[in-house]
Image 1 (cartoon, rainbow, N blue to C red):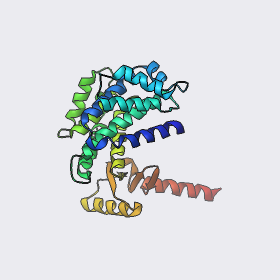
Image 2: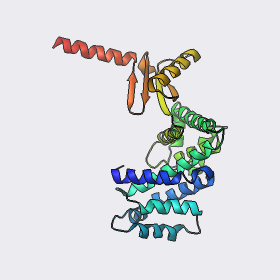
Image 3: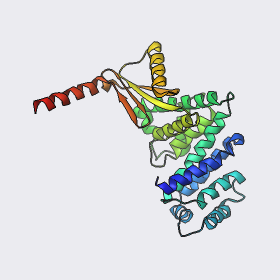
Image 4: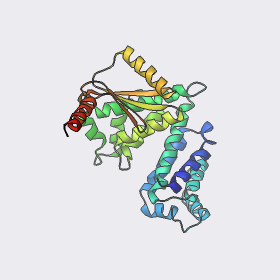
Length: 276
């Protein structure tokens, strides 16, 4: 997002915080439904992001469309977004998707313990379980991304892949497979998981290994990463035989690569440099 859109999203998230302690999953569902309306009308998106219109005028347009059709909070959240400044028409839809998923994540946070970590931990585990299951089977990948299949059929298939998932996870996974908005469903679910991790004030460490780690190795890896970054990380481990050996860790934009393939590549570069 451009600066203006990023600032508007940050302000919207700050405003949303006041509603989250008492928010319900129905609010997230309503916001996702409104997102569907916006995504279905380029003209409406342009009208709500037209810089030549006053914010109050754009807010009034939202009220005219949604009053009596959605809850007070859902309408107010959308109207506030419309009143803000957006650099691109798509940005307002992207922002609404972030707000809707944040509401669902906050509901999970209400679910367990004083700090909410138990509920968020389950949510993230459910989301990662879906990603792992889909990415390990090409037929399943094709099925959940088949835009010719009815939305409900894709949703039903996706939810069968994660039996026992929380209601919040089911909503987010269902949203990702029925309205991926140009992204791979697994990529969108990963975005939701990252938002949940951020809510939990933790980072996600994506750990790729050539062979499965033992429980002791996993514990040492977790402890080492926590010590390196000075905070508790959510470790998501995947198998990547192409690494040959070693491990590759990605935390945000930072990549720690100690794989055999990378070390061989570095050796080749050194030898090539010496030969010149």
